[in-house]
Image 1: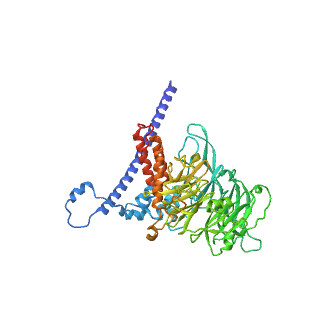
Image 2 (image 1 turned 45 degrees about the vertical axis):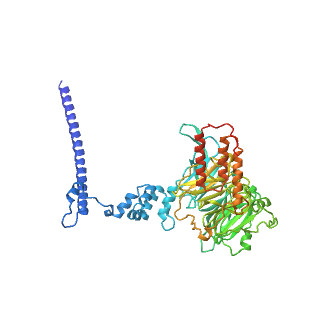
Image 3 (image 1 turned 60 degrees about the horizontal axis):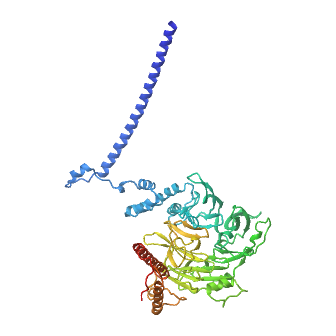
Length: 620
């Protein structure tokens, strides 16, 4: 019994010790809370003191109505805050909100345009970016490039026709250009890194396995300047990828320099990304662009130097995968030999032709096959099969800024934003409203100031921008296979395609299976169009329905009578509506005017509601 009582007393003592320890812990928590409250009260008092000091009016008689304002409290201006604090707060806003805030007043415009704000935003968007680049506002340019980058695509086949977005590499510093191949997509950023976007099988949200485009990425190489592949529109032929890059080469033993930077061309398999060939040039030669031309067995690589000269070399693609050493000869192209005073700014190529644009806006052509020459110029009079590299000058009214080269037609954009088309027009791919070939550059009058221009096998695309900065995609030519969304029968004039274009789209490309749009905004690069002088704007001829000749009133009247006769020959109201829509597409009208007429015809057609679907008597 004595032992049990002692054990009971021991248990009561243990319980008392536990109770004391709990009370001590509670006291410590209360003390810490009271200390935190005291600190917060002190901070609040300091802020109140600052507010009183900043909002304290100057000495003098009180203004009438000041007693009423005391109840509401005096407002504090944001300009009284330290600039570093305001910049720090603004840096947490999204890029779109920062741009909008900078448009509210002069003060916020100055604050939102400082490099400190954009440096913090850039580090949030791309934490691994260490170099801000060059330019007047390097951090702002880098932040906007990384905020707007994106690759969007829409597949032509299948039931689902919606815009999709590819995977965005976190290491990419904006998107400069891209190239789709048979199985994958390659993207070059502004830091010279070439990314390899792969198609793969992934699991969907419903747990199903599906084939998705450009869903995984790998860094293919660094230090890249430019890249190219087979120039044909069909991606099946794009087996190899040619990359123009800069590499450090070890110096010769006994020389003071240890290593030198030399330009080289590396050839990769597009299917696996494996490098199969490499050619290195002398360190004194620096190149900035590469294009391909010719067949696989006689593939010519055209290299543009920084001085505007063009060199070429020929390789055999069928032997690139063999483990052998090759010796290729780099020679000066004939356009640089015959015209040494010309300084070429950029190049464009196809399988059978090459186009050069000089720094003065001149255009020179090389055509290597008689069929393409006939389609482009309408004759074989000046074609020399023994001298295919002889450059041909195109006669143009103004300086050319950029171009697009298809298989047998081309598009040019001059400094005033005017679009000129030339070549084969069998499917209406020139957008002139008819299907007659053009042997000379012909202006498309209802389109001006495009963002981008693209010419395919038998259709053309134009990326334009509205007054509210919204983008829209226009197309003409053959619509088979869904290549002109919303226009399966095609169109001889540029019509608005049924596709949603991202806001910052800057370039596009169309293949047999898919339409790609690259989104990236560079604040230091945009087409600097000039206003057309009044002397050239007055008396501009209307778009011709013939072979580039000016319209006369008699021809217009005859065309309208022909259109009316075609409408009269339609047996039903439905057929007449469809014929009228087709005629509106043929007419040389502005894109907005065509959209208006098409919408009005759709409204009339819906209002009719099939009331008069039977045969209609022909009116006299």
